[in-house]
Image 1 (cartoon, rainbow over the protein chains, first blue to last red):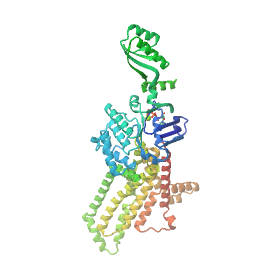
Image 2: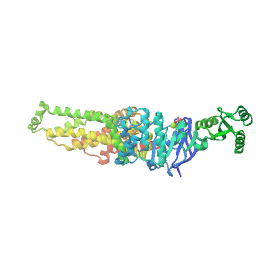
Image 3: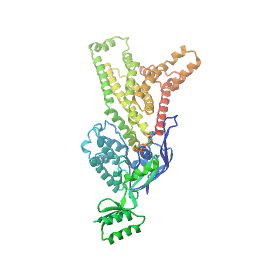
Length: 309
Length: 277
Ligand SMILES: Nc1ncnc2c1ncn2[C@@H]1O[C@H](COP(=O)(O)OP(=O)(O)OP(=O)(O)O)[C@@H](O)[C@H]1O
Ligand SMILES: [Mg+2]
């Protein structure tokens, strides 16, 4: 089932009432997010990621097109009861303590007092912030604010969580903790949408990603599908002699990566097997054959560079 | 439930920003000064001295003291103070990074505005009640004249005037997103402009040009009338309110200011509901 659905969503920002300068932040975007998935929304700065999230939450209004969450039109504010949100560069009221922030926003999500007490204890310790609960947040560091923001986003037990750069400013250990928290939430059946520039992280946790560029959806698919480059194999062997290496280079156009490893691009599985036959005939031991994977970063850079051309 | 959480949040904001506490502190000082004045030996003697004089209307004397307390200068100071207190509510709510979280909650934008309005009015009502009730009790206990109308009308009408002015502060806060700018516009525009306009009858005797007078009339009816409402409260307290010309004529400033307030709130709600954040 799709928990988020957009259809030809377009957002045009007009700068100034009388000027013709306008920015198309989203351009006919049709996107579905499946239930119980971690969905990564990628794209260069200004691609429209934050704009999409804000539209889905009713913070800004689309110029045209349709969007639904939980099958309800986004204009219905009641559907936001089951949603959590961590905005980018959030600024909670500075005079509050960490605990007060959770209480205030929890109540606004419709939580009861007893439930709030229990949940705020639970989530403050989950994000490692229980020591700071009574401290005014104007004394928090950036990463501490981010951890508190994450606790705030999870507090009301939401089915759908929007996180705009959740690990921004968080130290490496904290980032790992946050990843674990997200994977854990996902295993409890929550759907999570993450905007992030840290592609190695996205690759670690996301099931599906979409790449936006200038408001357009340029690529979408599972991380698995997007990162596998078909027909390129990494073959690990033992003891390649000089002559075999030469044959591999000249006949098979292999790319030797180290003494006993090489990459082979074949046009078909048959070709790959012919190579294996050859190696076996020469009594070469094959240790491993694996399909080559691109990193998400390679893919991202490729896609965005192609767009620029 | 959620609506109440919002309202409570605004009251807590006022408390934690120390503005509310400093206003209560200031009011306490005023009350203490009045208390000290009343206990002066020279003042002590006055009641007996005056009661001895058969001709002297002692009750009227106390009422005239009360009227001084709600006269124009203290009115101007107290209203300005109140405007300062609440002027940051909307701009601080609209701060980038803050408004996004608020709007992502299951609350309608309309109820956010209404709750901001109500919480401001509630805060000011209690601040006024604190000040006026204490003064009233002190003056009444000292003089033996329990003039309930003073308490009733001054708290009610001052809160009402504040509510009218606050509705404009909300709209300008939404439009400018700046506390200072919103405050300057409201204080500069309202107090001098409405004070001058309240002298409309006097102006009519001097200005003979019909179109000019029509424009002045028009602006007068359009804008809120804090000074005129204060005058109504004052004459109600004094007991000199005649209500000549019928209800609508006598209470015209109250009614037209109420219309202004509702219009400001409608505009605020309309604008807030349309805007991207
Ligand atoms: N309130 C606004 N008014 C005018 N233009 C805006 C507004 N918000 C966003 N934009 C424009 O819309 C485009 C998309 O912005 P958006 O914030 O969605 O990008 P993003 O993908 O989140 O970028 P980043 O990775 O830097 O966070 C940008 O060109 C931006 O300038
Ligand atoms: Mg962004």
